[in-house]
Length: 188
Image (cartoon, rainbow, N blue to C red; front, side):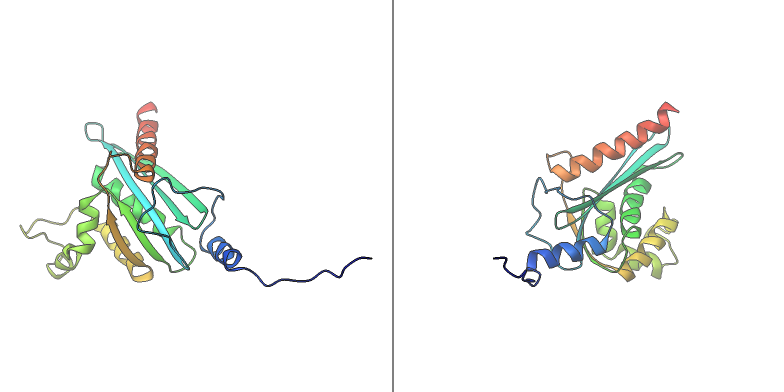
């Protein structure tokens, strides 16, 4: 005797997986090496970003990891004639631009420059002062800051600073990727 097949409602875990797949095109099966302040849920994404630059040659690389649940997207790239701060900003910008819809983002970075611009009101002051610093100098990387402001209007950003080169798994990983991208330019 065969039993009729019963359809079961989706479990909470299955619903979370489906929602994660809708946020970004991700690879499955990746687990965080160091948890950051508990799990993420819903439209929440952890975004780890970093930049690297050879200041003598101006070769730079950026990288980011976006993670939601068990899904992950890794992005990286490089640029000639750049600075380390530009690469830090590009890592975040490229990650934000890759998202399919508005999300709650936890940005995990070792860049105080990037974090403080958002959390300490630097961006607001620069805008009020016509994109001038407190010392009346033009703000460097204005083009990237303006693009990041546009993304910040789409996504809810929270910044978490981690000290670089101290064994934080994802921070070490994005740093390695950014350095690899920088080295690609040197090899050309």
